[in-house]
Image (cartoon, rainbow, N blue to C red; front, side, top):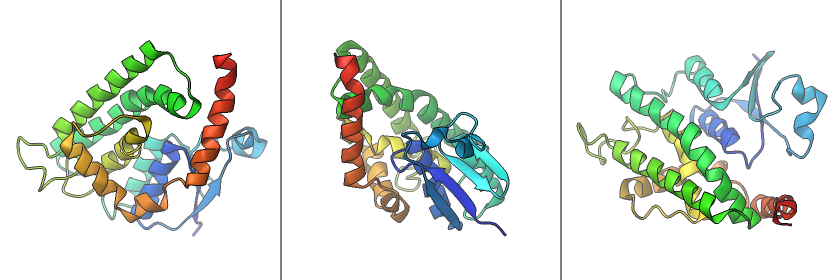
Length: 229
């Protein structure tokens, strides 16, 4: 039986989502790092990633792109431990959180990342993005614990008493927000949830090293110089 291969970059939130799930499910796998400074355009990688993006999951000769598709594949093929709830309402909560994290939160965070690490950005556009992030956080805060039925204490994850794919997908972004100058102080359930995720071994094992973060800052500043000029 072949070992799964995860083509990834340690600073990619999408890559980290898959990496965390592989660890949580205790699946044997091999990490294949890419530097994204040209590695992603090499013919060998383009042969398995048509759009030259990470992550890519290789299961023998089957190559899967797009993070949510990879996570669904892992959940279907390795159902234990389950990372999706079975109840229809809870499953809808988990799916909503995943889609909002990908379609609303991640795009809103991108300019904040460039501003934080590259030192540039249009103030008006940045403020709009902060408002968009705040809207997502309010939405997430309301879903945690699903207070119509249960307390946050008994259901500290999205739609579940145990961590789900929704927590992974949203968590890798939300836990970065304080680094971008976005406080979670106004969202006590999200704050507690974020701390709970950061305490997990899978989160700690996949955390980017300070050296990688510093190198990313240097790269971002270099990329932003033409725009600043």
